[in-house]
Amino acid sequence: MLDVGKWPVFALLPPEELRLIRQACVFGSAGNEAIYVTVNDEVFALGTNCSGCLGLGDVQSTIEPRRVDVLCGKKIVSLSYGTGPHVVIATADGEVYAWGHNGYSQLGNGTTNHGLTPAQVSTNLLNKKVTEVACGSHHTIARTTEGEVYAWGYNNSGQVGSGSTANQPTPRRVSSCLQNKVVVNIACGQLCSMAVLDNGETYGWGYNCNGQLGLGNNGNQQTPCRIAALQGINIVQIACGYAHTLALTDEGFLYAWGANSYGQLGTGNKSNQAVPVLVSMDKERLVEVAACHTSHTSAAKTQSGQVLMWGQCRGQAVATPHLTHFASTDDVFACFATPAVTWHLLTVDGDDYLTVAQSLKKEFDSPEISDLKFLVDGKCIHVHKALLKIRCEHFRALLNETDEESIEIHQFSYLVYRAFLEYLYTDTINLQPEDAIGLLDLATFYRETRLKRLCQEAIKRGISEENAITLLSAAVKYEARDLEEFCFKFCVNHLTAVTQTQAFAEMDHDLLKNFISKASRYGAFKN
Image (cartoon, rainbow, N blue to C red; front, side, top):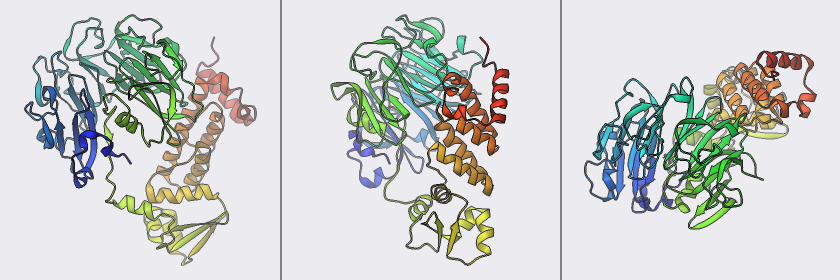
């Protein structure tokens, strides 16, 4: 659970108000501005209100929250801000709204007049559904559901990707190398833009004097350029600092490039890097990387929830990833970034009121009011008959036929069966990919379609060169077609390493035959 109290701008809000906050963003040159959304989908703002960036219709500062009427009920899904500051959001309906500083047309409305209230960005976007927005210092980019990228605003270094350095007053489709490509993730440094494609390729454009585009040179780029050094490496998330870039691979590895005067690349030195460098992590695989265009701070989260930070940390230059006690990367930016701003839109849970889902989760495997226990591998799991009947057809039939207070299970392991029962209480699973295979077997046996899909997603997140063949075999066995295709493509993309594993050497003959045949048709063995 995130603690919004770590952000000083919220210090004067009473606890009853803090508990209502569902989303929040802290921004501004000193972290002195904030916008937040309550559980009732009301939007409030407070702070110094530079350039009208709070969207309140004036430029008056406010130490107490004021309601932003035009945004209430809009359901914000993405939010970003510049250094003017200007603020841009995307709503659940795919609409884009912008307000604040507009000296370079970064609001996309065709003028350079500051916007004191949120206004919809309409040019070229009215028939598009935008799901993600990102801002540099004075430019904005947006990604649509179709994987298109639009850009507007300040363009002195080509950061709008239009092929020129003229400022772009309204949204313009970024085409060039991105034409007919599907973008799945975007990010902005101060004066550059980055995009990740659905095939894991990464493109950059704009300012490059610190090597932040990762192209091996220091020349600015006015159109998107593919980072050739990442050929064959599948990037799944990108994050930009002031002048450095972090990229997370599908195997949980981290690559970094660009400015490094504060050690923000995590390479152990302060030398800039014009090409991506693999950051040495003796910890487990990473699941998230974090950076913000306003600072030289970097952070990452591991699969087990450990949080690391490096770069400029409260004035200190930390050149290698440092393990913290924080629960999230957000805490790093609240406590150690300068300025202390959020690197993405925070989602904040209240800590007193328990929803129905939270209450059920709390009672799982609690003997106090349970009326049924399962015995698996000599261990007990305490549950509630009514909930099991509601949640699972298998148990509805089983428990209608028996009044037993204890049931022994022999077909599945304790770990797998407990995960299954916990899923019925929480709608989530938390297993290593190898264990998720056992749960996939159970989901197939009990015909739990959604659980089967969650297992496949867990397996996808945990795939590596070492276990890829094992996971592929499981996907084939349990007829998980989507997972099978995912594992197969991963194996082909990492073919050399995968074929040297023990699992490949012990692969079932028929599966091996089919794999080689399919890989050949896929073009894996072409020179």
